[in-house]
Length: 313
Image: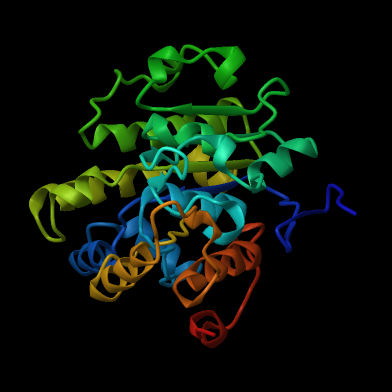
């Protein structure tokens, strides 16, 4: 039986945090970007988080797209459980590709919604609006929870998003869809909400636009990661003292082995087949690792030896 001391979802139990928890998903966050940034001293705050807290690389969900990975994080489960296994799926009736961004396609509620249902104030902010409704599935907006995107921050209403006048609150203009500001807006908005709205659990999802455009080590990529790092503690009274900033990245390993695995996963899709029904085979075990890390280290963090943290099952 759930209570204000624990939340249970998809066979995973999450303890009720005793201070605010913030989770950031850096979409497209290949470890090579942080390896480079850490080596060059570009991200001193992330370096401090990793030294004083915890740092590891987790396998992403395959295929390594935005929706499957974000939904796996917020549900603590793989696509075989939550149902979002790609950006598109094949409609058996029409034979046409249909986008998988609708919350009605999800077979599971979210960790955010469960905390919301038990009285916690939660917030989810995403860069691209296509992900907003899935992150906000079943959240109690009427009860004070907040869910919006930086892409459409100028269109927020209390009824649909739980907040209005977002541009004024953040103090930034509406960001361009294809710019680093789309993600930086999310971080700045999170800092403002942590101070003004005081959510207990907050999920911030960034876009992978810059990672698609610039390789690790390019000046633009370095500048983007430097700007992100500054925002992690730019409002120190908001992030570090008022709440607990968990710099946990479920980093997408978009390297050779993931590309091969992604190709194998797609090869299993057949015409007229709903590939959300694919079994939770070896390619999807990364999500299980993500779920274990969320349970053990994010809500709230617990102390483990380094050897046990880095050992893969």
